[in-house]
Length: 82
Image 1 (cartoon, rainbow, N blue to C red):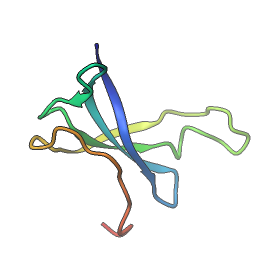
Image 2: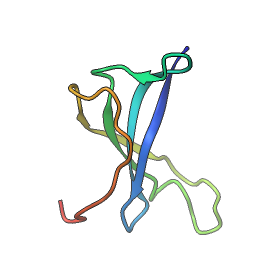
Image 3: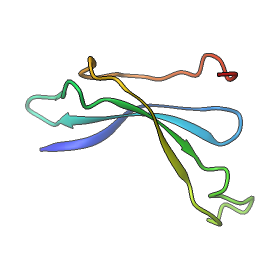
């Protein structure tokens, strides 16, 4: 079975998340598909209010495709001023 998975997630200081998404094959193969890896930005600043109830819409942006990768494991924010 093929599924879309997230293998890495990190957050900047203001409710903006960065996520690795990939198409992944479960057991018995357990490997990713080359060319299916992308990194997305998920902006939830307008989605949650202070009482943890939804109030708006989250925004999703594709940052980059990583066509040479088969599987990326982990994501870290190195510099917030990009």
